[in-house]
Image 1 (tube, helix red, strand yellow):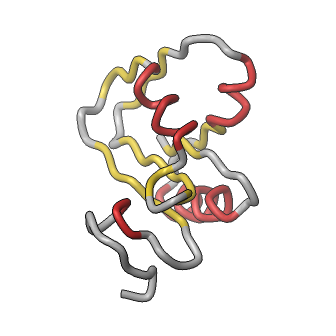
Image 2 (image 1 turned 135 degrees about the vertical axis):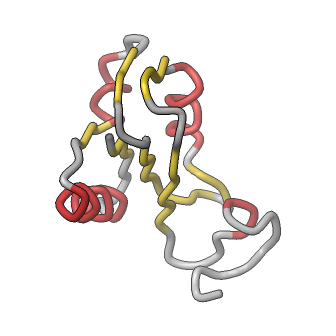
Length: 100
């Protein structure tokens, strides 16, 4: 299952592209967050989380959503982080650019 949060649409685009290529389900975490309920979601396939990088790390709202959501099924997870420049600590633990 591909779980995404998108502020401007870039992460949604990446998630939709991956879902089409992998034949996997999409879940819009932003809509689930607005509902304000604690989620329990299941996937037999690896989890894929797509989110933007804000201030050199994954968007706080997405990180918090993942922490408070009960994920059942697969124990494998992948993260797709979208950014323009300066992914920094999100991917390398230090400052840098997405071009690196």
